[in-house]
Length: 168
Image (cartoon, rainbow, N blue to C red; front, side):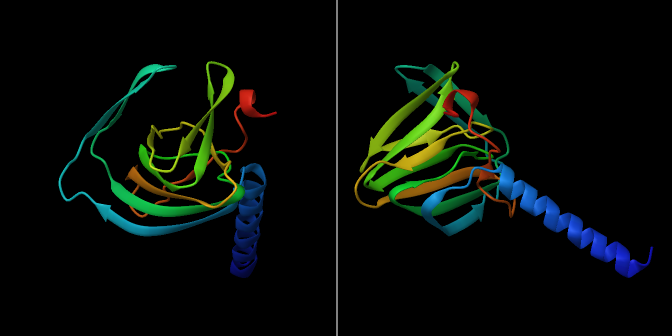
C-alpha cells in the first residue's frame, strides 16, 4: 500500500469509529452547556466527600491527587435531558432556576429524585451513570463544578446505553 492509501484508510477508520461511537451513546436533547472556567490545583489535593442519603445510607467518594477542575453553566429547555452519562470524578451541581430530575439505577431499580431552584447535589462520578431531565415548564439553569477531570479532557463520559433497570 502507498502512503496515500494508508492515510485514506486511517481517515475512513476514524470516521467509522466516530459514527459508531455516536450511535452507541445516549445523547442529550434540549441542552446547551458553556464551560466558564477550568483550573488545575498547583499542589497535590485529595478530595473526600461523605454523602448521607436517607434511602441509600452513607457513601464516601475519594479522589487522590485531583487533576483539573471545570465549571460549567448548563441550560435545559423544557423537557430537555442530558442523556445517560458519568463523570471522571465527583461533581457539585447547583440548581439556579427551574427543576431537574436525576435518574439512576440503585439495587436493580431505576430511581429518581427531583431538585428545585436553590438546592444542590453531589454526583459521585467515577462511573456513576445518571440522566438529568428538566421536568419544569420553563428553562432550568444549573451550575456544575467537576473535580478530577483529566488534564485537558472532558468532564462528561457518555454511557452507551441506559442501565438495565432504567431502559424502559
